[in-house]
Each structure stands twice: as structure tokens, then as C-alpha cells.
Length: 155
Ligand SMILES: [Zn+2]
Image (tube, rainbow, N blue to C red; front, top):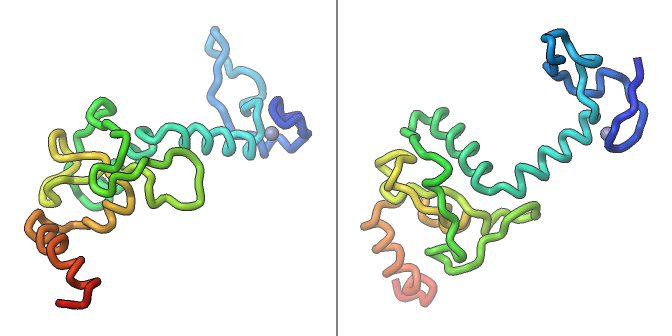
């Protein structure tokens, strides 16, 4: 069976349209059991949706990673606030689709021994998060003190 995608207007096989559980008001299955937009149109709009909603993206990524690694997680949307600049690198965040994710916002655990829990997180850039990694406050102090000397070759 063939069907025309309502978005790209291309005729494709029914299998190229994602399944849907849409039901009519009386509870009987609605339509042909497939979405009106083809899979590639659905994927495109999902990606667009995802890229333009950084908080949703951070929540989903962080929650999934916490579960995999057994880290506490109790954040809600209102706990995540994206400041104008990365508080560590003082650069603007880059949102949306791009080739480099260095300055995309990420959720950082202030105390890496605690989880992604209320009061222990801030939004910082991906680069700052990678630089900080799992370092403690003391390790960050050492790093900040010595990194300039390191470049000046006096360590
Ligand atoms: Zn399509």
C-alpha cells in the first residue's frame, strides 16, 4: 500500500510512515494506523524540536546518563536556568543546530560527589564542563593557579 506524505508530498510505502495509536472518538482504530508524515519528515521535525529546546535536551540527556551510571537525579524543568553567559568561560551559549557543541549548555554538578539534584547544579558550557570534569573545588583551585604558569613554562 502506498501513501502520500502530507509534508513532503512524496508517495511512499505505508511502512515508511511511523505507526500511530490514534483512535477515533468511539475507540476504534483511526485511519490506517500510520502517521500522516513520513519517517524522514518526522525525524526532521523531531530533530528541529529537540535542537530548539535546550532544556528538554539537557534534561533528557542528563536523566538517561544518570540512570546508566547510577547517579541521583531529581531535577525538574524549573530547576534548570540558562544564564546569558557561561559562568565559567564568560562566553554566550550557542543554542540550536551547529557543528560544534563546545558552547552548548550542559548541566554541571557543583559537587561531583552528589547527584543531579536540586541545589547541586548549574548550567555551564560543554567546554567548561569538560575542563572541570569531576574535579573538586580544591583541584580546580590548583588547576587555576598552575595552568598559567604551565603555559609560561615556569612549572
Ligand atoms: Zn515526508
